[in-house]
Image (cartoon, rainbow, N blue to C red; front, side):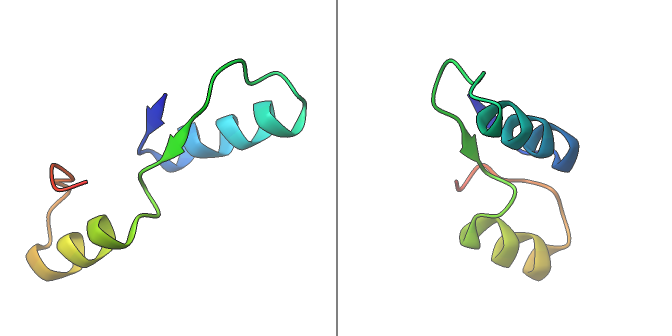
Length: 49
């Protein structure tokens, strides 16, 4: 699972903490490349990640 929204990421953390996350998940929202790209170009494209 790859999640970018803050709400989705928080839900995945809740599932993981409860031991109910059945598959690995990746938080794209906090990645360094996405943050730098968004700050530089002021857009929500995360294709680089």
